[in-house]
Length: 256
Image (cartoon, rainbow, N blue to C red; front, top):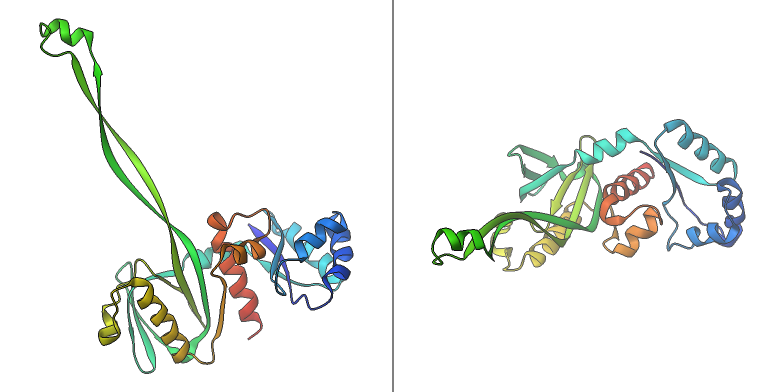
């Protein structure tokens, strides 16, 4: 997937709508509806399977005065390879991390340039066995009327969904690190450890911000509305959140 977005929309959006409508071949009303998303972007305008079409649209938008960003398939793959943090330890000058694969990493706080906070959907799949009874005439005949029912066992998958806070940190080099509220182990917090995961996660975010005063901080992905504003009407936040994090981090870090 190749994603085309516009950002830094500082002009009057009603004025911009006619230019956007001309480029996209839509009505001014449709273009204005897209531009009315809160903030100055980024806003996804279109996405393609072919890079050439995305590049062409980006060039047309630039010719009309829009600032554009092209999110490439390789950048999406990099975001998809983000390291999931299982354990962490906050030092004075650096962050020690153990991933869910058991790998140990160390990151100086001074290298972190973006802290991106949001909320996603966590999926959990379990199996359960369901027993059902039904009348079996054949069994009744064979057993002389002693057994007239049979038991059938069926195994089925049960999928549950739960909203889960996350924070991504990005450094000057390497893949991003993802901290997920419900899967982190917080025992390194010591005396600051609290009974509730949510409280521990909020504390972690506050400490990351304190240790990284030079890093950009953005939390527009905390709400589904914020995610939808960025992704637009064609991409579901629950299925394409990684597109939102990849695009937002790209645009914000390009400004550094």
